[in-house]
Amino acid sequence: MLRLLKALPLTLAIAAVSIVATSCGSNNGTKARFVNAIQNTNQYGGGLNVEVNGTQQFTNVTFPGVSASTYTSIPSGNVTFEGFEYPGVTTPVFTDSTTLSGGTQYTEVATGYAGGTGGQVVLLSLSDDNSLPNNGTLNFRVINAAYFSSPSAGVDIWIEPAPYSSAVRQPATIRGLVYPTPSGYVNVPYNQAPGEGFTVFVYTAEPGTAVGTPLFNRTYQNINASPNSAAVCTLVLTDNANGSTMSSFPVVLDDNNCAN
Image 1 (spheres, rainbow, N blue to C red):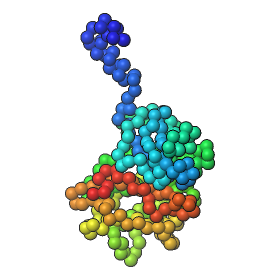
Image 2 (image 1 turned 30 degrees about the vertical axis):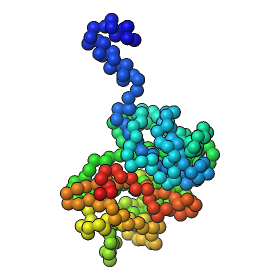
Image 3 (image 1 turned 90 degrees about the horizontal axis):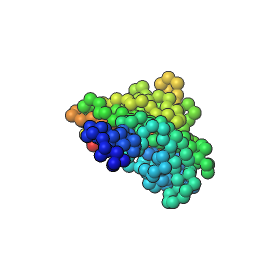
Image 4 (image 1 turned 60 degrees about the vertical axis):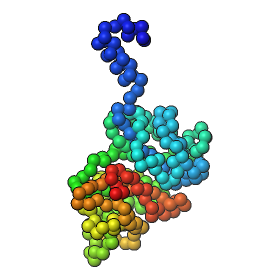
């Protein structure tokens, strides 16, 4: 190749180098983070090593947990994700393929039940929009990855400024979120009470405005914007370790300025 470049005019040689660099592989800015929502991960050592097209990108991702709050550069195009028992087991717990666009950020969520071959594992490949909304507001997204415990009708979710004291419940922030799907991004005004954050109420989805007993509620005092800032947050609903109920501790992903 070097002899060929020497024989070419300078402009053609530069072009050839560019083609070679491109052909060697570029992820075009594609990045991903990985969330382990496979309830029976502990049967496979408690964590997963995750390879993308045969290269390990995420190490010992426990249930329920996320690889990191930052993104990892990965290839674009048609890619294969394989999860292996940590440490050092070569038989995959799951294998799934998806198509990723260059220059896009993704959240990859492995959910379902790893029955030895991973046939019941679902890999959600979700493109992220981490652009900040207007100052004084937050964008929330919720991903329902609770394989065992999500009601068949889905869940209704309220995201309310804490402490919640309204005598009349407002319409749900997110309605009928079934497994295994994400909501869209919903815009919520910041909480004007300093240091109080938001309380998330999760109910079994009901028609109209009817609500029963919440599946759980959780307050996040460190999630808030201000009149001069904004944030983007993603919450991932998972099962408890025993699989029978929904965890009251959703995985919180800091998309952009979430914990400020």
